[in-house]
Length: 109
Image 1 (cartoon, helix red, strand yellow):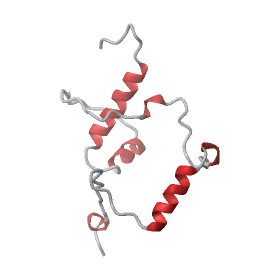
Image 2: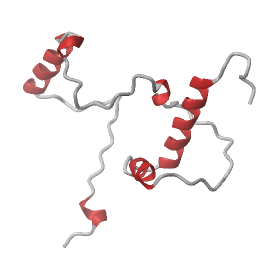
Image 3: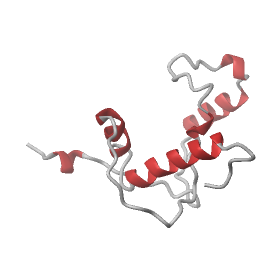
């Protein structure tokens, strides 16, 4: 019986060297690109209309402080399943939230 570690497949996409697409894949992508927004079925996506902070920052700050933080188990598992550097991702999401909620007179933390 394989262990969990051996059954996990990890892939990394090199954006400078994308994989070659088949003709069928290209035609499907072209069909989606031509669709009007109204034609796209969003019924299985979560409603994030008021969550403007979901776009996490690409660059992560290097000054970090180690703390103990209690997070709901399902939230922690979500980030852990995204792979390595899950703590940095949590930090990036929190940073994006803070940036989105700063007021013009309260920008100095």
